[in-house]
Image (cartoon, rainbow, N blue to C red; front, side):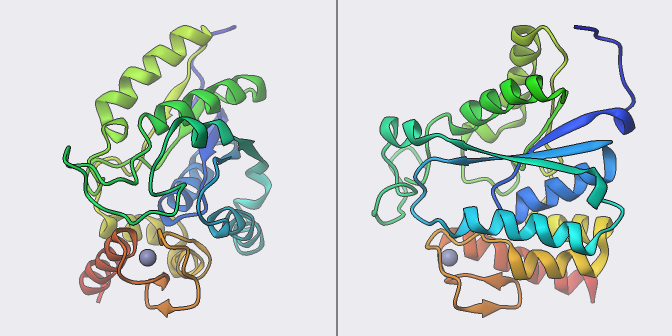
Length: 241
Ligand code: ZN
């Protein structure tokens, strides 16, 4: 395969898209930058289907409200990773309370999950002619997940590019920004309309709660994911006003 460098504006990207705030920010970021963008999601027996349902709504709303992005947004791929549920036992896939473990990680941690996701994504990207993978991993607000760290992902980028014998860039636009800065990023990409879309249609809550509507969106308001999202939105609102 040719390794001639391509301008970003001519490249095709595959975005790891869960239907949450962070991956929606990544999707908008990629649509602004690359010629073509496809999305990939993973079904691994999450406790709540709501996040997977949000994926289709967010994609449809982006196409409806952002005519400049609509023609760039290509296919969506949903991979069945039921085997991940077989090899891990965590609060995300079983009915267990979310708590901190002795090693300082929450029990929502699926060991090496992002390594697996990115590797499956790279295989699909190769087939689809995409040379950029975009993911919402973040060191700033992360829950201590070692597979969200910048160095982990840099190492994986090298391993994937060597193993595929093709350039495979791993982009993580949220790596060093706070949740408040993520709201500012999406505002800069798509204005208030994009943030309204994110508030209304993306899902973050660990408990799958979608009946309580807050200024920052739907959720229980008290799980770690809701608290992070609410705090970030409040900080963003304070600096914006
Ligand atoms: Zn919640």
